[in-house]
Structure formats: C-alpha cells, structure tokens
Length: 364
Image (cartoon, rainbow, N blue to C red; front, top):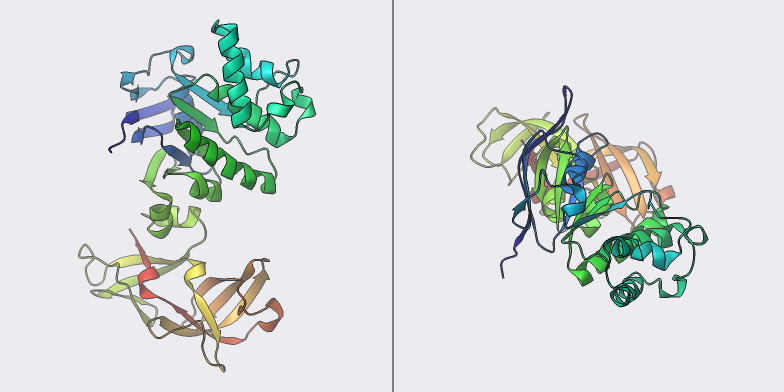
C-alpha cells in the first residue's frame, strides 16, 4: 500500500542577511518514515528542522505538513513536537509531571492525562521512575523523558535535533536501537538531524545528505553508502578510496599505468573523460605474496603493493597500502577466525591487493 505524504518541502530557502543557510531544497517525507538530515556542522540541517517546527520562517518556498501549508503558521499551532539535545526538562518537576506538562497546558482532562502519561512511561521503560526528578536520572533516562514528553502529545511529526549527542558512545548505540524500535511501535513520522554517519545509517529509512545548504543525495542508507552520487557523499559517509583516472574504453578506467574494470561506467562517459573511482576499504582484500591466497579470488582485480602503515582497531586491522603504480589505498580487514593478527603484518611487507570490479563506484 502506498504511503501518504507527511511532509512536502518545495523550493525552501532561508537567508540570514547575505548568508544562505538553506538553498532551494525540495523534499518529500512519507507518513511513518524515519527520515534523517545528515551533514557536517553549518550545512543547514538544523535550520531546516527549525523551519519545520516553526521557529524560523522561510525566506522563500513552501512547507506542507499533512496536506496543510504551514510556513506562516506559528509553532504552537503545528501538530509537531521537537526533541532537543539538551533535553530541556524542568528540574523542579518529577518525571511524570515533565511528561504531562504539555497536556496540562492544553487543558486535557485529568484522567486522560494520567492514562497517556502512564502509556508514555511504559513506552520508554520508565514506569518505575515516575516520581524521580531529572537530576536523579542518567543521561539516557533523561533523554527518554524528553522523548516521552514529545510523544505523549501525539504529534503527526516528531522532530529530533541531535538528541543523542550528549551521550557516551556505548549509550548512544543502545539508544539508537531503542529509538528506532519506539518509532516503529508508535508509527509517527520522525525527522532526525545528525552529523553522525553511523547513527543515520543504522536508524533511517531514508537519508538526505546535506552540504552548504543543499541536499546532495537523498536515498536509502544502502543506496547512499553503496552508490554515493558524488565525491562529497562518498567521503562523508564512511571512508572511501578515491582514484583519479580517465576512461580507457567502455567499462575500463586507466589509473596511472593500470586499467581498472569498472562495470558501473555507463554510456554518459566518453573515452578520455576524467572520472573518479571510489572503493570502500572493507571491499579491499589483502593477501601475502608468498603464501597461497585465501582472500583474493579469481574474479577479483588484483595489483601488487606493500604495507605502508597499519592501525589495530580491535574489530580488525586498517592497512594503508602503497601500490606498485605509486597510488595508495586503505583496506579494512574485519576480524574473522582467519584474519591476520596485527603483529603478523610488517611495514614494507609485499602484498597482493584485490577487489571485485562491481565494488568500484563511479563518481560524477
């Protein structure tokens, strides 16, 4: 069944004086979708969220929420709620009163408030901390209270501005799983702002990658990671090896004195065109020269090189490789029962380097 449209943004621009924070963006977000705005600091993602919330007025363009134009509607009249990184809880109120605050202001019946607050506490697993004050809670618990306070109002859209940014790494990852599970359970449209690529990839149905006020690519996490539209996306979403070359023939790119098979090369490229090829480090296999290969297989493109540097990451080894043609690649060897241990690789050690041709991405 086709999903209905929760948000439509047409030609939105926001200027602060001569500075263009958001530059002519078009986006659509489906009802019930977990949609992330991802990009570096200053790219315009929080300004976009604030325009959706009504805290900023667009310089031009339109915003439609559930079929209604809202670019001139004040925040309190939009059926949206916002969760901030700072939590913004009231220290003098306990957990249940923090959650009930918005309902009381709207003069919801007392019995209804009690029922909805109880449901919200259960949803975020804080039923046993209902009478605790915010200063008695952990960072993760305070974030759950902020989330429950937003959800108890039953908004059509929930806006989240880097809500996990103040948490340590382990708690962030735990909260990512919990937040996605809550979103699936309640079925509310989430628009999530983050600069953390892993966070966006792990939670989102779709990601809009932003840079300098514009959306560079909007697609599923898999599409954004496996098929970035240009160099910025390939470099911002994880690590990419970028190789400069020229089209040699249909399906081949010359990089230095090596011809790479590139099945992704389409008819829009002509012989002699300059192109960039990207290969993810985890797609690069490394084998010792003088031992039988077990990682590099027959259908891989191979080249010789040597190990220039190495970093042990716990989950595997990150190797920087100097290729025989003078180029460099980074390879990420994820730990398996057969992976080389860190002290078995030596600086300057000759190696064979390989990857499957279909893992080469052509960047426009």
